[in-house]
Image 1 (cartoon, rainbow, N blue to C red):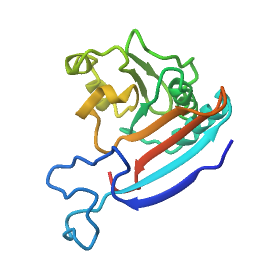
Image 2: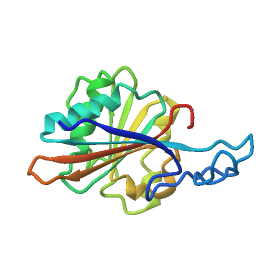
Image 3: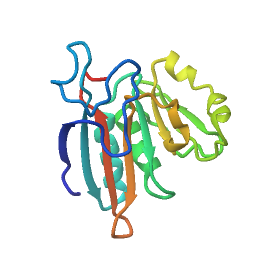
Length: 187
């Protein structure tokens, strides 16, 4: 497993913007922002894994840091390891049952130290489908939400969602993983 590369910087990573009404976009420096307008700082971590076990271990690493109400948005092609990553997250959160992709049911709820809602948006046809999933229940109970195929949620994802991108690597089992999240205290 390749070590994580980390780095914080002002401004959102490529293709990621903070949509916070009334606040300046993240590309402005602290000097340009008023004293009441926070500067958004993003933390980007990247690694490569060589097996499903290593991919799950990276999910577990993220899972140990999650707290109630966090949303983890997963992006990647079919077979890129989104469910495997979530399986590791759930293991860290005390989920003991099997974690499988909810492709047809769209939502699985797991009991752990904190409730986990595992959402798969692969089959959604539009905003009406997303709205009909009853995800307000997840917010009501303070669950952690893991969303596969998050690009299909559009603007429904909160601005502070943790973004996990999984890509196929050079080898058959190699995965490139990129985790983008707001610096602690910025959400």
